[in-house]
Image 1 (cartoon, chains in turn purple, blue):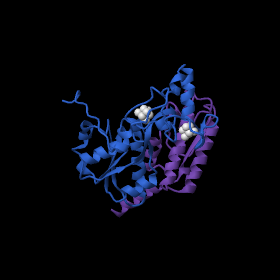
Image 2 (spheres, chains in turn purple, brown):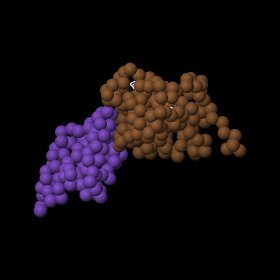
Image 3 (cartoon, protein in one colour):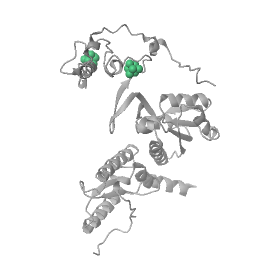
Image 4 (tube, helix red, strand yellow):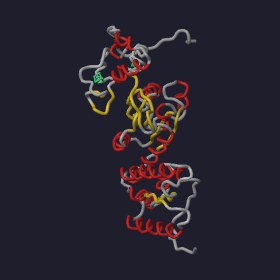
Length: 119
Length: 222
Ligand code: SF4
Ligand code: SF4
């Protein structure tokens, strides 16, 4: 399967999306990421029963925090797909890429860059 | 355990905004278990505040530390060497921890990062309910193991009151009437006779009404 994906995202592999915590998402933004999306297995198909439900909750918590500090909760998103859905994986990455381009860069990164330039 | 809930981030931002160097201090005990002020919450709050203040052009030094307890001298001593590196400490411990830290580090402003709520149990994931008001003279032996002081809205000692209806309390239809629970349990234990005994007037001097309290145990003092 040769599918086109945007070249600007980095894949971080987890044993299960249930491993992800709010802090992992926030740290990505602190380090300058413009967006984060979590791709879990289909709901109901988690090998560890509820890992992907936990992940969804944590993505929601992170989104809420990012909204509260004006970084923008729309920059994080949870997707679910099965391991056989490569084309959908590619489609989601394009969707996310478009969304982030629409939103513009992470304001935390922008502020840090501005500070560096001023110095 | 002591149940606390997170303070709104807006309130915390307001409290800390004028300090340049901030230590966020978590506690490994109750507030960790009720997910309000443990290491994880410290990390999330620190990251949130760092991002907020960078974005506002008011970058701060915000560091993290979590102690085993903040209500014991020995653990609080662990930060003695670093306290002077900060203009303020934001403590995510319960009110006891915040105060004990403040007493120890007299010249460092101490700010609370959580609201301390009550003594309660983890009834289900993400839900904590009150069970005890630390009255200092426990009567659970007479009340089927259910506390009317913390669980009855009126703290009635010989209940229920006239507002008890279909097992629920009159202040809230969702809330079990504590006295209904007491009677049901005494019945199940075959101890309804206990219910007939009129409770004596409770001595409230061991409760907060008697002023701040103290427990002294000479047997364990060295
Ligand atoms: S009777 Fe007093 S000590 Fe016992 S559970 Fe109730 S409030 Fe707590
Ligand atoms: S209804 Fe029951 S719980 Fe509510 S105040 Fe009356 S006795 Fe207490």
